Image (cartoon, rainbow, N blue to C red; front, top):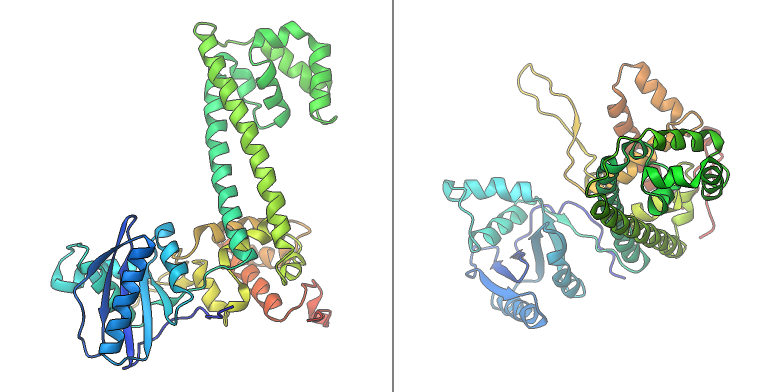
Length: 416
């Protein structure tokens, strides 16, 4: 496995060829530049194997003509469209880097003193950013980590889809049975919506039957009191009856789709746990009380491989949790996180931070201490996110497990 440690590239040396690519959905634009300033006119190549081979052949010819030893290939972070090309290039003898879209946008306006954006200008600007050293080498997930990234992203999309459908369901239910829509958070109530969506159907079955159904589907969590509450609400419901049949048809469709999404998410989580077991250092992350298997799988998927990072600052920047401030003269700006990293990685860490600051959480004391100093709750949670990331990086790097009483030397190194 090629072990490219992610880091800031630094200014390129005098024997490096810079190849910049402006990524598109159908076609990309390539551009080459030698250290002495000689270059080629930006050219188009398609997102097909023939296009990739065309780019690679022209790149090798340019390298040979200028007698250059090293090749740096850079692109702007553009989502999924770059992935086939990156996997084509990662087995080549090149250094892959990516530039921040914010950097290219700002430098673009300096080039020619114009915000003009064209396919010929964009790759040149990317090359300028790389030559200035403002690019990061790239870590591409492989093996189980690649599977975990795809699975965690699929789960996130499925959850968003389910949430959207649940909101639509509540809107429709409010029209025909508004009293029940207030109690939609319960999965047991979702079962009622699927089988008894109208107030009349609830009243028709009777209180005893409703109580038995709720007790069964909730596995004893909902008793007669909740059943009586729903039954009395159905008796007094102000839901409409005109056009109700059409609304019920759409409600049935949404309930069916929500059930499919739930089963799909359950299946994804099962696969995530399977691939998590294939990551050698997963037990280290799971030793942190407050990070479950799904969260650990998401962390590894988003990072790619914790072991390919040499310093914590690199992984903090990847998460967009690196700090910055804007100060001028006597004005001292507040420190904030940049948010210029992987947003889903920050989301995972944020929810993990909520877990570890609970009353019995491993970082509850630190959280309380921050609040005691007058720090706002949200800022304290962000600070916990950063600390949690440092802990995770350290125990993976040192091949250890997390032990709460670490100050007494209770951390033990695991067998290699």
